[in-house]
Length: 113
Image 1 (spheres, rainbow, N blue to C red):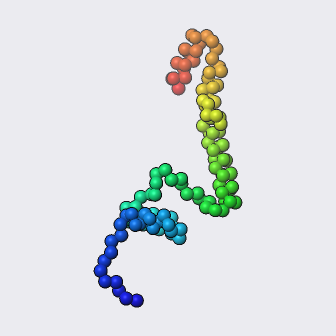
Image 2 (image 1 turned 30 degrees about the vertical axis):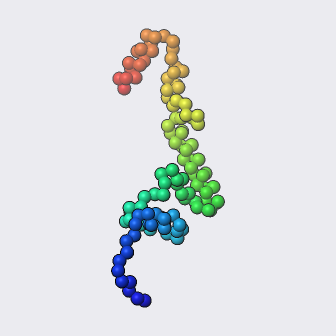
């Protein structure tokens, strides 16, 4: 194997073009190359890569996990699927007595807590 004589410069555009074509790099290797040569992501509008890749079974499993997490988050925050106001505020609105003096006292007591 002969040694190369001279030097060569790799430009950011060349690195971007090469990274878009290749599929053999790991995500860590790609990140290092982008950082080292200042080559940003191909586009800010490009969709994010899927964690499951081409594996349909894994994609289904990840979707189920995501749905369970969203359901748990909604229950924790008290929101419904449509994004209406939390249960606490709805309960307070429902218990309004219609008596302004009583409502004023109740509000003052809640602020004291």
